[in-house]
Length: 396
Ligand SMILES: *Cc1c(COP(=O)(O)O)cnc(C)c1O
Image 1: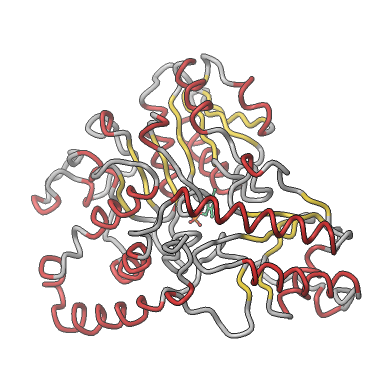
Image 2: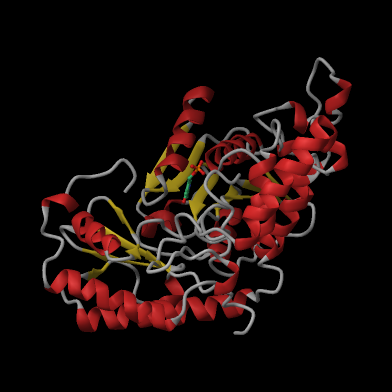
């Protein structure tokens, strides 16, 4: 696994075991310097010339190709920009247009709220009988039928880590004549993804979680190449126009995936992300997956042996999990605050989920054992039972 573990490439604060890379990845050491250079030499010295001279304008597709490489997508099928929520909206709006006459968007109740809110918002705009239908994750299969225009699912559940079967679900969706949209927020950089092999029409994702692009790093969108010149982007921005600098009065979609761009890209943020993506060049995703499962299995085994107060909330079968493990505990919020106070950073998701992410690029077996010892101490000695851990912060 020589090319998977690369702790030395990240800033990892002394005394911290970071089990929250599924929410915000750590800072790649090379990013700070590269961003500073970009600011000083490109923005500072080139000014507006940077768009041409420093390649800022191509950055969303250049970095998109790097992301494509780790989600099994071909060159030229992924573009960066905006936030994941916006990319969800774009994919949904384009997907329903591909199926005129069908009015239902199907998702599951375990999906991330923003994905569902975006679908609600779109349905509200479209009116004309459009509907968002959500069912329990286990019931999605039975709910796919010929009324459905688009099935929108997040492959890995943000709360429990439960993983949908991407290939089988896409096949079923297609067998019913519907369009498939995958949200890869908890998949990209977490496990091998075979987008091309799945034959899915759309995929979206974010880059500040497992890809370590930093807070506010842009989202990405994938459109299956055979559809890229056909889809109608709902958010028709000037940089998705065929010729942005012709400044035409009316919108003409750009070539291929370029049409999914909207406005000015976040160049500083993309620069940090580009550095982070360079770290993936020699990572074998199958090896990463094997390392992730080994860390998760070790964690589950040691927690169940040493910390009987916690109940596993994630699927026990590792093949049905992403790269995180969740446990339930009634006072989970306070317990997580007490654990964080002692250097083990995970997070909490209402109502009672303590969530731990496993990221083999910068975590090893020794970290896992150290983390379990701290969690055990907090639980065994009720160290969480303290007022200071019970007031909820704005971000949990
Ligand atoms: C993290 C996450 C989001 C967040 O969307 P942003 O627009 O980047 O804030 C949305 N959907 C899913 C499934 C997520 O995991």
